[in-house]
Image (cartoon, rainbow, N blue to C red; front, side, top):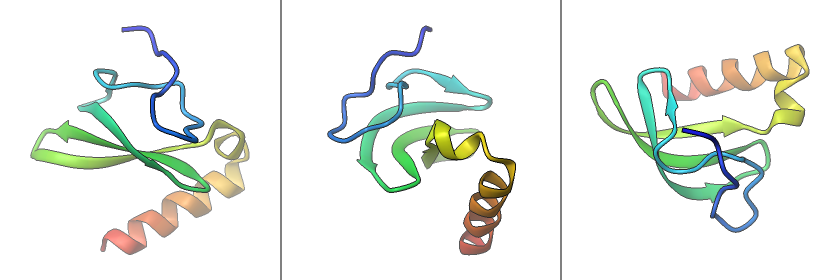
Length: 76
């Protein structure tokens, strides 16, 4: 599936429902946040929330790594 502009207000992501990201399939956009767009979705173990980091932030390895580390710490 080709990525299309998102439908959520303020979305920075060009993804939309139905796009597969690895083992995860995006559902509807939920909300935009400063560093990412949140989507409902389905994963190997059931429903999930997927945060797609804005491309301009993901291009900087140090920023991307800090976001990922913070997300993992919050999930723990």
